[in-house]
Image 1 (cartoon, rainbow, N blue to C red):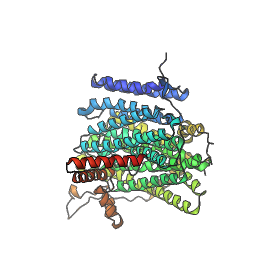
Image 2 (cartoon, rainbow, N blue to C red; image 1 turned 180 degrees about the vertical axis):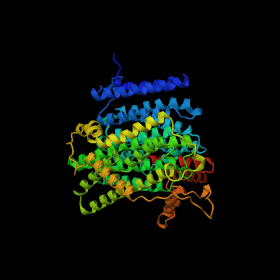
Image 3 (cartoon, one colour; image 1 turned 135 degrees about the horizontal axis):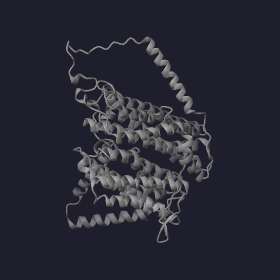
Image 4 (spheres, rainbow, N blue to C red; image 1 turned 120 degrees about the vertical axis):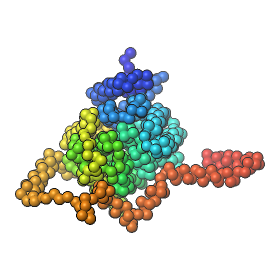
Amino acid sequence: MAVNELTLLVVIPLGISIINIFIPSILRKILTFLGLCYLLFLNYNLFIIPAGDAYLFNEVIFSLDKLGFFTIAFIQILSFIILIFSLKGVVKSIEKQFFVLYPMTVAFCNGAVLSAHALGLLIFWGLTGITLYLFGVLGQTKDAPKTAKKTFIIVGGSDAFLILGFVLIWFLQPASAWSLWNVQLELSGQLAYIAFFCILIAAFTKAGGFPFHTWVPDFSKDAPVESVALLPASLDKLLGIYLFARIVLSLFVLNFGIHLMLITLGALTIIIAVMMAMIQHNGRKLLGYLAISQAGYMIMGVGCGSWMCANGDIKGGSIVALVGGLFHLVNDAICKANLFLTLGSVEKKTGTNDLDKLGGLGKSMPVIFTMALISALSISGIPPFSGFFSKWLIYQGVLDLAKNMSPGYQIWLLICLILAVFGSALTLANFMKFLHSIFLGKRPKTLDNIKETSANHWIATGLLATLCIVFGLFAMQIPIKHFIMPIVVEHGWAIPTLIGSYNPILVILFFGLAFLIGLVIYLFTKNVRYDEIYLGGMEPLEKFRVVGTEFYNEIRNMVPLRSLYDGAEKKYFDVYDLGSKGSFSLARLFRSIHRGQLQLYSLWIIVGVLILLWIVK
C-alpha cells in the first residue's frame, strides 16, 4: 500500500534528523539537502494532484486544504533556501546540533500545518517551541542562555493558552470533535470569548504580534543567525499567521468589534515595533523589531479582510485586504530571511553586527549589498518589488471597509491606516540607517581587508532577492493566482476586483526614466572635488568617524519619546519581565500569609476549593 504523501512531509525530515545524529558532518549536509529537495518535489506533486487524507486508527490525522498548502509550500521553499546558506559557515562547535535540529524543525512545522485534529496541532506546535528553545541555546553570546529561557517561557506559556482554548471549544461545541476546520463557533458567552483570546494569544506570540512580541528581538540578537532566519523571520511567522487565519476563517464567527480590535492591534504592532527599531545599534535586534512591525500588516489584512466574509456580506475590498495580508506574510518571510542572512554574511566576515563598528562594505561585498538593498526596498513598500503590492492591497481593503462604516468607525479605521502608512515610511528610514551603517559611509580601517562572502551565501541570498523581484513583477500571475486565490475560491467567495490599476512594468519605466534624467543632470553638471577631512589640523582619529546611527540618536532623546524609550529599556512593557515580577510578588505574598502552621494551611485549602466551586458552578 502506498504511503500517504502528507505523512512523508513529516516522516522524512524527522528521519533525517535522527540519522544525522550518527553520521559525519559532510553526510549530514548532503542528506539534509537531498531530503529538503525531495520535500520540494512532494509539494510540487501536491500542487498538481492534491493528496488524500492520512488516517491513524480510522481517524484523520493529516489533511491539506488550500490555506494549509499555501503555508506548507513556503515552509519548504524558505527552509530549502536557508539551508543552502547554512551549508557553509555554521559555527563548528554547534554544527552537529544545528543539522539535527534543522530537519526536525521542518518536520514539526509541517506536522502543525497538516494536522486536521486539534490534538495533533497541539503536539506539533509544542514541539516547534522546544526546537526554538534548543536553537536559542546554541547561541554564542553571553546572553544566549537567558534569551533561550525567556523565549521558552513566553512561547511555552502561550502553548498553555492554546490548550485551554481548544478544550473550551470542545466543551462548548462537542460536535466539532476537535476539528480545526469549519467549527464556526459563535462568540456568545464568556467561555467562547475566553477560548478565542486564548488561541489568539498563541497565534500572536508565534507571529510576534503586540504585546507578546518581546522574545523576538532578543532571540534575533543572541541565537545563531541561520536559526533566526529560519524561525522568527520565516517559519514561526508562517505558523503564527496560519493559526490566526484559522481563527478568523474557520474556528470562530467574529463580530465587528473583535475585528476592529484586531485591526487596531495590527496598527499598534506596526508603529510600536518600528519606533523601537529606530534606536537600535545592534543590526540583528533592529531586524527583529522590523520583523515584528511587519506582522502588524498581516494582522491588519487578515483582520480587516475577514469581517464582511463572516457576516455574509462579501465586499471586494475586504477580500482584497485578506489577500494582501496573506501575500505580505510571504513577502516578509522572504525579505526578512534575506536581510538576516545578508547581515549574517557580514557578521561572519567582520566578527560583529554592531552598526557603529561597520560601514563602507558596499565595495568589499557588492553582491551581499545588492541582495540586502533589494530586500530592504521590497519590505519597505517600494515599487515594483513585492512588498509594495501586498501593502497596497491591505491599504485598499481598509479604505473599502471604512467607506461602508459610520463616521466614527471611519475615523478609527483611517487612523489605523495612517499609522500603517507612516510605519511603512519609518521602515524605509530604518533600512536607510541599516544599509548606510553597514555598506555605505566611511569604512573603518579594521575592515580594509574584508572580501566577499562564500558562494553558498550568494546563491541563497540571490534566490530570495529574485523572489522579491519576481513576486513584485508577476504578483497576480504567480503567488496570488496559484497560492492565495485558491483559498478565496475554496471558501466560496468571489474573486475580488482591485481598486485602481497597478502595472509593474510601467512603474519600472517611470523609475528608469527618472534615473536617466538624474544621470544626465549629474553628467552635465558634476563638479566634484574629494578632500581629506581634518580635525584641529590633523587627520581625525577613528573614534571621530561619523557612523550611520548618529542621526537616529536624536530621536531617542526627543522629549515626547524619551520617557517611552526609557520605559522600554527598563522592561516596563515586556510581558516576560512583568510576568516574572508579578510571579515573584505573588510568591512573596503567599509566603507572608502562610506561616507554615497546619491550621492556616487547611484554611487556604478550603478557601481554594470554595473559589474553584464558585468558578465552575
